Amino acid sequence: MDKERTKQLIKDGEKSQAVRRKLIARTPKSAEIRFQGEQALGQEIVGTVSLPHPIYVDSAEGPCLTDVDGNEYIDLTGGFGPMVLGNKPSVVEEALHEQVRKGWHFGIPSAPQQHLANIVKEASPCADHVVFCNSGSEATMFAIRAARAFSGKQKVGLFDGSYHGAHDYALVKVDSKSDRSRPAATFLGAGVPSVVADDLTVTLPYRNETAFEIIREQKDELALVMIEPVQSSNPRLDSGEFLHGLKKVCEECNVLFMLDEVITGFRIEYGGCQSYYDIKPDLATYGKAVGGGLPIGAIAGREDIMNTFSGKDGAPYIFTGGTFSGNPLTMAAGVAATTYMRDHQAEIYPYLMKQGNRFATQVNDFCASLRIPARVMIAGSMFYMVFADGAVNSSRDITDAWKTVEQEFYLHLLGHDVMVPGIHIAFLSYAHRPEHVDAVIDAYRHSFEDLRSDGIV
Ligand SMILES: Cc1ncc(COP(=O)(O)O)c(C=O)c1O
Image 1 (cartoon, protein in one colour):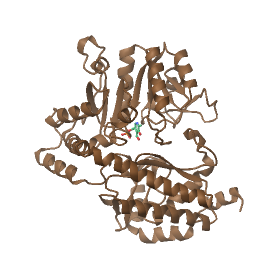
Image 2 (cartoon, helix red, strand yellow; image 1 turned 60 degrees about the horizontal axis):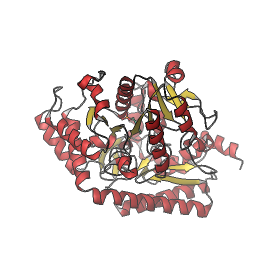
Image 3 (spheres, protein in one colour; image 1 turned 120 degrees about the horizontal axis):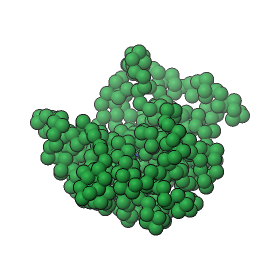
Image 4 (cartoon, rainbow, N blue to C red; image 1 turned 90 degrees about the vertical axis):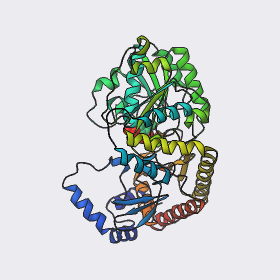
C-alpha cells in the first residue's frame, strides 16, 4: 500500500483496530475522567507528551504504574525524567512522611535547603554556590538573567534541537527549513515577542563547528551559550569533543558557557554530564532528579557569577523570587534521593548504563534484521526511538513523515502494557530489574510485529 494512503488510514483510526478496541474496553474509568476533565481543563499536560490512548494513573510503585481501571504497565515515563530510583522509592517516601509531620511550607528557609545545597555543590564540579527554584524552566530563566547581569551583554546562544524550558527566552527554536550550518530562528508556539528571536538570541548548529565561527562573530553581544550536554530529542553520549571545543571557544571569546543539566544531572552519572565528559562550565542548571520527584530547579556555578543572586562583593544584583523556592518538602525529598544516589553511585550508574545499552542493542538488532526503519538512540538510561530513513546527526533528521507511524507504535506498546508518552523520551530506572527490561524488549518486538501485520511498516 502506498505511504500516503497508509497515513490517511492511520489518521482515520482505520489501522490498529484490535489494539484500539482492547484499550477502549479495559479503560472505562479513564474514559469517564477524560470526559469530566474536558468540561473544565484547558490542557492536561503539554500536547507533545500526551499519551496515545487516554489513561489516568492511580498509583506508581518501582518500575510500574497502575491506572484507575486497575491495569498495570511497565513505566518508561520516569515522571519525565526525575525518577532515577523508580517510582515511590522508600527512602524518599520516608523522608516525605517525616517532613509532612513537621509541616510542608514555611516560606522562611528550613535546614534541608542548606543540606541539599551542600550535596549539589559536592556533586557538581562547577558549583561554588547553588540557588533553588521550582522548575527547570525557572532555573534556565534565572541563569540567563544572571549571565546578562554579570556580562553586561544581552544575547543568548542556543542550539538546533534544544529544549531549555517554557519561558520566552527558551522558546526560540531553529526554523527547520533554514540553512543547517547557519540556522534561522523561529518560535515553539505563538505569543513570544519577536524581539526575543531578533535581538536576544543566536541560534547555533548542533554538533557542527560552524557554531564556533558564529560565536566568534557575535562575541561582543553574546552573554551566554547554553547547551544540553545530551539533547533529549537526540540522546547520545558521543558529543564530548564538541562540548570541549565549545567551552574553549566560549573562553576565548569571553562568553559564559552553561550546561543545562536539568535532565542529565544525577542521571547520566551522579555528577551528571560534567563528570561523564570531565568538563566544567561557568554555570549549570538542574531540575528533575535532584528533587527526588518533587518540583525543583537549581542554578549552580562559579562564585563571581552566582554573586549576582545576592549582590555580594559588588556583583550586579538580580531579582529572583518564588513562594515555593527551597520549600521543605522538595528539599527533604531531594536530600533523601540524592543521598541514596551518592551512596550507591558505584552500583546505580553502571547498572543503568548496562541495562540501557542491552535494551538498545537488542531492539536495534531486531529492527535491522526485519528491515524496520527504526532505532533506539540512547544515553545511559534515557532513550528516544527514532523512525528515520537515514543517519541522525541532529533532531532535524527525524522527519515529520514518520510521526504518524511513531504514534501508532506507542499505541501498540501501550497495548503490550508498556507506557511511553507519545513522541517523547523514555527512561529506565534503578527499579527496572533485568526481568522488567526483558519484558520491555519483548513488548517493543511485539509492537513492531503488530505494525508490520497492520501494514504500517
Ligand atoms: C534540558 C532541559 N532544560 C529545561 C527543562 C525544563 O524543565 P521543567 O519542565 O522542570 O520546567 C527541561 C525539561 O524537560 C529540560 O529537559
